[in-house]
Amino acid sequence: MKYLITGAAGFIGFHLSKKFCEAGIEVIGADNINPYYDTNLKLARLDELKHFSNFKFVKTDIAEVRELEKLFCENDFEHVIHLAAQPGVRYSITNPSESIRNNVNAFFNLLESCKEKKIKSLVFASSSSVYGNNSKIPFSVNENVDHPVSLYAATKKSNELMAYTYHHLYKFPVTGLRFFTVYGPWGRPDMAYFKFTQKILNGEKIDVYNHGNMERDFTYIDDVTESIYRLVKTEMKNEYRIFNIGGEHPVNLLHFIETLEECLGKKAVKNLCAMQPGDVLITCSDSSELSNLTGFKPEIRIEEGLKKFTKWYLEYYGKT
Figure 1 (cartoon, one colour):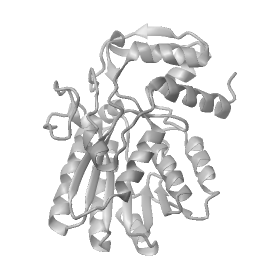
Figure 2 (tube, one colour):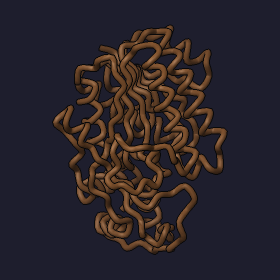
Figure 3 (cartoon, rainbow, N blue to C red):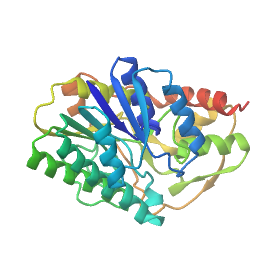
Figure 4 (cartoon, rainbow, N blue to C red):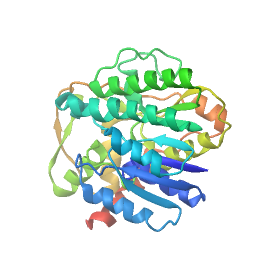
């Protein structure tokens, strides 16, 4: 079995490529190495993957039709895991055209190529943001998600609709993954836990939105890759599936900061702020569909996960 993993230089794409290669699976990793955040970190992830003989990297922009067609024509793979995207709830508000280009247009291009090549299965990244301010907790894949509160969430909801249509019309298996606040080593510098770590170590103030009255269902990266690995190992009939990938244990933002302080051995200087546009008060996953099918659900708690992240951060950036 050969897999195309888009966004292979990204956070989740890097870890998933590594896990697949360690399992002896051939991986073609695609990424455009865009400058949304530090490209040196993306290149360092790729350096880690170069040690695997069953990993091949292709630099390409899947939002460009000709580049994507070349990728599909010149490489032999049967399955696609699409993780490339323009992340960022707030970024989508200030840069809407980038979110549409990289999340909607690029996904349409990918679906067309999957149809033409007659791939055997497609797995794609959605997001817990599609739940918006749903009041029913925990968030279930069986609930309505027609009220996104950010453009980023709307692009992910559109991905789910487009994927279902292509599955229905062209009869290939499709699996959508709603990720809940993924964190861990080699993570994304634009995410709160990463920025908090940097600022705490530098003695700078951290912005704590809604005065800390928020909860997030943090999901450690190893739990995410194990979930995906088990899902792709299940028998994929010609069906359309959606799964939550989350830990089912929302963490209060202030408790999260306290845990981070303990891991770093340094107190944060907090700047308490109002709620930001596009934010939601709570995310909480119902991962029963995942556990019922695979026998696994995310289990690493925030105390253990942040300890592993800060250890990596201090080693990578040479902080003491």
